Structures are given as C-alpha cells and as structure tokens.
Length: 162
Length: 109
Length: 347
Image (cartoon, rainbow over all chains, first blue to last red; front, side, top):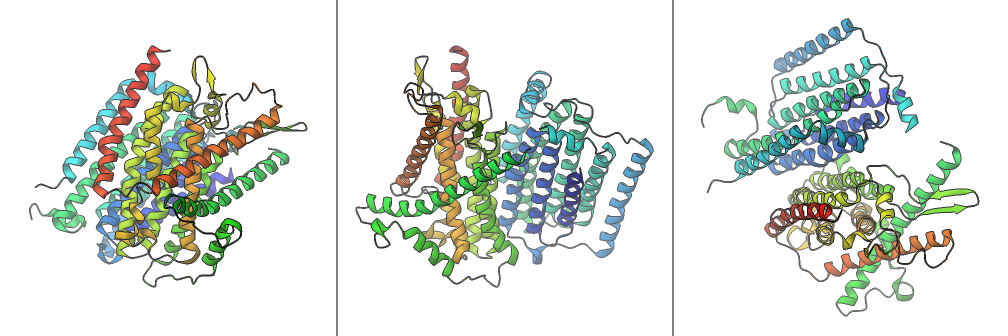
C-alpha cells in the first residue's frame, strides 16, 4: 500500500523535472524515469500486459525516437529557447487552475471506494487477447491502417526533396 | 499474484484519480511554459500516459477488460503520432534551423 | 512467501549472475583464441597454461588504469551510461529457464528465477532498454564521434527490433504461449509425431531472421557500426577509460551470452536433449544433463558469434538500413503469413 504512494510521489517528482529541466536531453531522461514508474503502477494493478507493453512501446521505442531526434539536432541548454518569466508564471497558474478544478470536481463526486482487483486474470495476455480479437476486432484492424498511414506519412515528410 | 491484489485493495479510487489529475496538469503546464517543440511534444505524451493509467484503474475498478484494450489503442495511436510529429519537427528544423515554436507564427520564410 | 523460497531464489540469482560474469570474462579470452585460430596465430599464451589466466590479467589492468572523466562531459550521466549498459545486460537472465526441476530431499527447486507469463515480452523490453546505456554514454561524452556512435546505435536497434519482434510473432503462433518455460517444455526430447520437436525445424526462416537481429541488437560485427574503430575511433566509448570502458565491453559479452541463451531456449530446445527420457536415468541426472546441454548450445552460439565476427567484414551504414527495412522486415512478414497457412493446413 505504501509502495503505491512512494511510486506515485516519484511519478509526480520526475514529471515535474521533465517540464522544468533546462536541457531537453535531461527532460527525455526524466520522462523515461516517469514512464518507468508508470510501468510499476501497471504491475501493482496486475495489468501485466499493459505494463510490459508500456515498457516496450514507450520506453523502448517512443523515447528512443525522442532522444534520437534531440541528439541528431544536437540541442542543449545554450540553444534552448526560453519564455519570459511572466509567461512562465501565467502558464503555471493556468495549469494550477486546471488541477484545482479537477480536484474540486473530484471532491464533489465524493467517491472513496477502494480499487479492488476482483478477477486477477483481468490484465493477463490471455484475457486481453480474447477481448481484443472478439469485441474489438474492427478497431484493431483500423489501428493497423493508422500505423501504416503514419509510417507512409513519416517517410514522405522526412524525405529530402531532390 | 495474491499479494499484489492484496496490495492495491486498500488504495481508494480517489487517490488514483488525484495522481492522474496531477500528472495531467503537469503536462498542461509543460505545454504552456516551454517553447521547445520537442519538450511540448513530451508533455503531450505525459498527458496521454496519465489518462492511460486512469483507464487501467477504472478497468480494474469496474472489472471490465475493455478499458485496458483501450489503453492498448492509445499506445498504438501515440506511436503513430510520435512518428509523424517528430518527422514534422525534423522538417521544421531543417527549414528554420530552430525548434522554437514562436518562429512558426510567420506564415512564410 | 516463506524464507526458504527467498533464500533459494537468492542463491539461484547469485549463481546465474556469477555464471554470466565468468562466461563474459572467458568470452574475451575465447574471442582472442578464436580470432587467433581463424587467423592461424597462437593467441594469448603467457598467463598460465594456454593463457587461461589472461582474463584475470586483463581485468586487473582495467581496474588499475587511470580513470579519466572529460571536463566537458556531463558528469553524472557519464557514469550512468556504462552502469545502465551492464544493468540491462544482466537483468535479462531472470526469465530464462536454465533447467527442469531439481529435487533435493523433499524440496523441488525450479531452475528459473521467475516464470512470468509474459517472459518473451520481458526479454524484448530489456533488449530495447539496452540501447539507453550506449545513447546516454555517447551523448554525455560530449564528443562528435561518440554522439555519432550513439545515434547509429539508436537507429540500428530500433530498426532491427521490428524484424526481431515479427520473427518472434511467427514463433508464438505455433507455441501459443509467452512463457519461456512452457516454450522450452513444448520442445521436449528431439523427435515425436514424425517430426523434430525443436522449433528451429518448424521455424527455419524465423530463426535466421532472429539470429541476424540478435547480431544487430548486441552490436556485434558485422553490425558493430556504433563502435567501429576505423571511422568513429571507438564510437560511443571513445572517451571512456578504465573500468567504465570495461563495463561497456563486459555488457557486450553478457548480452551475447544472454541472447545465445534465448536463442537456445526459443529455437534449439533449451534444456532438452535427444533421448532424454529413453536412457533410464533418474530425474535429477536428466535435469543436470539438461543444464549441461543448454550450456553446450550456448557455447556453440557464442562461438558462432565470434566465427562471424572474424569472417564477415562490417556493413556500410546504408547497407545496414537496407538489410533491416527492405529485406528482413518483408521476410519476417512473409514468414508470419506462411506460418499461418501451414498452421491452418496441418492443424
């Protein structure tokens, strides 16, 4: 139980570091740590498949792409564009307002029931696969078209016009 | 796996929602205060992930696997989004030699 | 979770960790001996008989060397890089089934640290994390060559991961499970129902794709572009010295060991060996012979890695990308389709 609060603290801490660190490469590295804490959250919820997919897709592929792009452009603290302090404060206040609104609506709903894992097999590959390939077969196929079109789009965009 | 299911039994749903709300707001703040296009993009990923976590929690709470399947789709979408988005950013960098989004308010260069 | 189980797992982890390190150490020796053999030389032969103490001498040299941290490097990350490389190399061994169950007295000991039911995906995740050690180290060195090496490592790993994942999918279509232990047990013995039980005979194309990708993922020659010394002066570890360099080299050998173990488990029957249950041996003896069989397979694969390294020259970078995207990925997809057709016909 206390493990959850510790990991939750780490997620918030690292995600704050993501947006406040000056160097974009450090931002990516903190984002990796944040996503790692998310993986731990998934495992604590016994959503093993999602945990490992989060691990592979986010940490293993998406963030490597981010890091790759940053290294390719060789960005660091000197080239980092900085907003004026006034805009920064306004931005933080704006985000804070959103947070306060969310928390207030949460207070009104007043739900304090605990999350109970009724079926331990819920997040396992076998169960999720059955749901994915029966109930969600069409969206699954459509998502493959989405990935294909994204691939074509990325190749087309990154190609140099000769 | 028994000890894992015991571990989450005592955590109220509220606290999960709170965690997701905080991380979502941090993502929003990141979009507002940074000018580097890639860091803004990363903040968007942070927001997507907080929603993913919340979907998983609700899926466990309601004992319905559909929520977790939805997270799977969000991840597929995020992968596609990153591929296209980073390609666009690389193009912008090639043309303007910067990834400051304030440069993009010009309609031509 | 009683104490005895914790103790048992702890001892198992310690043994596996020790074996990984010793294997990695002696791989460096084996590499030099194999290179010498292939080039008709003698190789290291001064330290001890046949030079078998050479790894110790090398290790002592690594520790004694001066530690240089470039002033322009980004301090902490420069140290995190090699640590992460060796960490990700070591944790992969947790899900590999090293043998069947061993019975000592009344206690049944499982020769596998943990049998999670997403074992293959775990291996896959750890492999995809492996690139961070190289990327962080290369970036933190603040050196053009290192940065180029890091960028090459990233694009190479991502490209070959796709083909690797697709080749594993074809295998999973036949096995129907993600647990490495179940996959190993399905390949029981050597021959049953009129065909070989080992997966390599059912997935020959998949195995070839997998082993090529394993070469690329472990940055071994002919895919060692991130560290090629002729153009990048050592690539991502140009700036490293002393034991930090040692960690990078060690991580490569441990990766080689782990990927050999994975290949042996997925495609070559793991701890199974021919006629294992027709010799009339006791269960424990069969288990121990199984562990020996697995290690023989692993050593063969490590030898194969070295054989290829000293035989085939390095790829050019565009050839590497062409091979990954235009050859291996279409082949892997074709393999999935073929596997599907065969699985439906011979159901």
